[in-house]
Image (cartoon, rainbow, N blue to C red; front, side, top):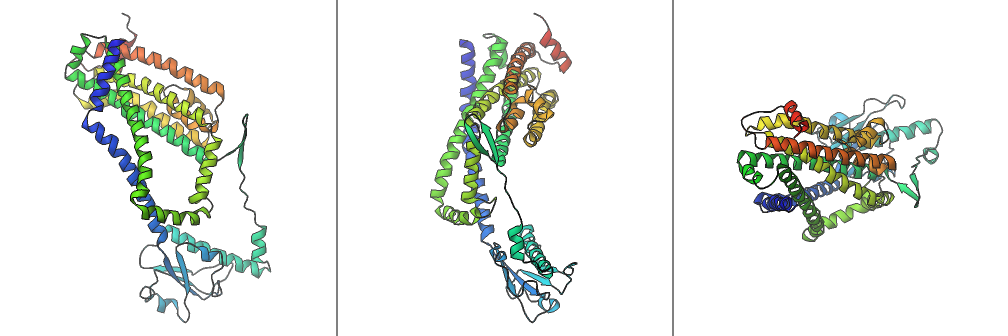
Length: 439
C-alpha cells in the first residue's frame, strides 16, 4: 500500500507542478467568465438597439395608431407615413432615418396579399417575427370586427393556462420546473462524459510515455505492475478533482469580481432585468425565481451523491481500460487511436442515450443505458433529476462496482504483460487472451 501511495504522490505532484496545469487551471475559468460576460454584453447591446419602422397603411389596419399591446414591442418603433406611395417612399425611407419600411396595400381580410417589408440589408429573424406578429394581430382584430365580435372580449375569452407540475414526495408537495431538471441533468451528464474522455486519455498517454521512455522498466523493478497501474490511475484522477475544485472556486470569485471591475455592465444588466422579468419565459427576477423553485423541487443531496459516485466509479473503470491500452502501444499514435476506439464508443453511446433519456427518462432505452455499466455513469445522471426508482439506482451502482472490479482485474493482467512488451503490435483478441490467461 505504501508503494501505491508513493506512485500516487509522484503522478499527482509531477502533473500539478507543470506549467501547462497551472495555465489551464487558471485560464479556463477566465475564458468561461469572459465568454459569459461577452454574451451578457451582446445581449444588452442588442436589446438597446431600436429599429425605426416606417409604415404606409393603405388598408387602414392600424387606423393610424399602434394598439397598446403592440406599442410594447421592444426595440421597434413604428411611424406612420402619410401622402406617400410604395414606389415614391422606398427610395428615400433610409435617408429619413428609417431602417425598415412596411407597406400594407389595400387588401381583402380573408386573403391578405401584397404586404411587403423593405430594407437595405437582411432583417433579423426576431425583428421580422415581431412585425409579422403585429400585422397578423391587426388582421385578426379586423376580422373579428367584421363578424361583430369585440376583439377585447375575444381576448378575455381566450385561455392561456400554465399547468404546474407538482411532485408528491414524503417531504410534502413540491413544484417541479422541467426546464431546470433538464438543465441540471444535461450539465451533470456532459461533465462526466468530458471527464471520462479527457482524463481517461490522459492516463493512456501517461502510461504510453513511460513505456516508450523506458521509465516503466525501472519502476517495475521495485513495484508490481498492478500497483503501478492503480497508483497512476488514482494520481491522475486526483489531479482532475483538484482542477475541478479550483475551477469552481475561481469561477465563483470571478463572478463576484467582474461586476465590481465593470460596474457599468452590472448597471445595464440590472436595468434590463425588470423588463425581461415581465416577459413570460424571459430573464431577470422571474427567471431567477423559476430556477430557485426548480432547484428546491430537486433532491440536491441525492444528485450530488450520485454525481460523486458515478464520477469516481466511472473514471476508475474507464481509466483502467485506457491504462491497459497505453501499456501495449508504441510510439505510433495511430496505433493508440485504433486500440482506444472500442473503449471510446461506449462513452459516446452513453452521451447519445443520455440526450434521449432527458426527453423520456422512463423509456426502455434510458433504463437500459442507466443499468449497463459502460454507459450508466453518463445516462443515470440524465435520469436522476426526474426521479429514478430506488431498486434501479441500487442495481445500477451494484453493476457498476462489479464491472469496475472486473475491469481493474482484467486491465491489470493486460498491463502486466503489455508494459514490458516492445516491437509487437497486439490486437484486441490477443489482449483479451492475456486478460484471461492463468498464472
